[in-house]
Length: 511
Image 1: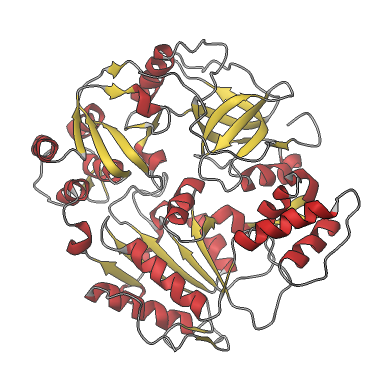
Image 2: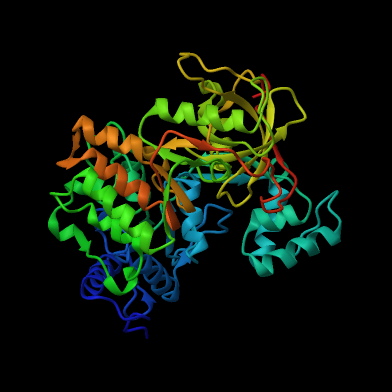
């Protein structure tokens, strides 16, 4: 019996915990008693737990995940799921992007992307048998052209990490060997915990409601709403009984100058000039806040400068490439990129799903490793993906100041499109975090001068809040249009070792 949470919650967290527990009982999971029960019939249930940075959302998400799994619920990660059982209860912890999911995983929460839950892999029959054996649902198989030692390696891997794709990779197999395709999920699941739900648009929310009879959205109402939703987030329309607001937990946020600055933006009377003086004061007191006269080019290689305006983004990227001596006609290994979408016709829908399932969704951050074996292909490291290294047909677009059309160093006929990632807009950075973050203050000053308001809050404050809270350990507040020269060359040695790249290619036209 698990009658109490494992930690002492604040009053608002305890209330939120109890209200989530009530919702979960309706789908056959009693986290107070630590048991599963028959599912109650009725319409889908959804509620939101909202709060600003430091209010304890991630802590509550982790504790609820622990309580649900201790009640006997199976976590679904988007990998192979095995045979369905009538009495099975399932939980998926979801994030809109790979980077947001990897942030949760780094904190011990087994998160996956929304896309990996909406679309599931279809395994070739012989590898389905291996997966069933690894999961304890079948006998050890014999597979042609796969020696027993390879199965032994797969088994040893699975004992330490419960990942079927990882185990098969340990046996020397590539994704194209054992995954026959991808399909839209047919079978519903039970419970979905959705982090960074301020990024959800209405279509994604509708898709999730089709799969999960119980959804709990964790979100920050002070962040930026999805483009095209007029400043509104999906949980804004939830009635009061379906929304819990978490307030700042002072004992967690204590002595954190970055969170102090973020929360100061809630003052309605605060001007940009007054806020910048607060940043200066924080920088004098604490080295976790840095008042920087120029952009740090070394940090840009893995932690993009956060800006508001596209023209600022393009100018900083151009300066970054020039500082590293990157020629216009090719990329240097180690250059950061951002996925700008998949450019494939409808007849290649299955291939699009495959690319997206490997992490190449719009906004994904990748690092260029070098050209692939085929013309137009790139070898990439997908930041935050569980299997990060791939080779994919690419369309690389490098934008230039005052030029409408980007130059394209090389491109396949169709495939994954990429923009440079040394600088990104604050909108695109939402959902991501980095140890150190550079915020380009001249752009926020321009937003303040423009006087724009979003959902009743000055836009510059929303931008500043999102940008500041991307920093995990250090915030760099950049005050001038200037770039410091890099002190080290671009490279890829800092990226974790990974299996050989998976070749992702379409059946036709080399996509």
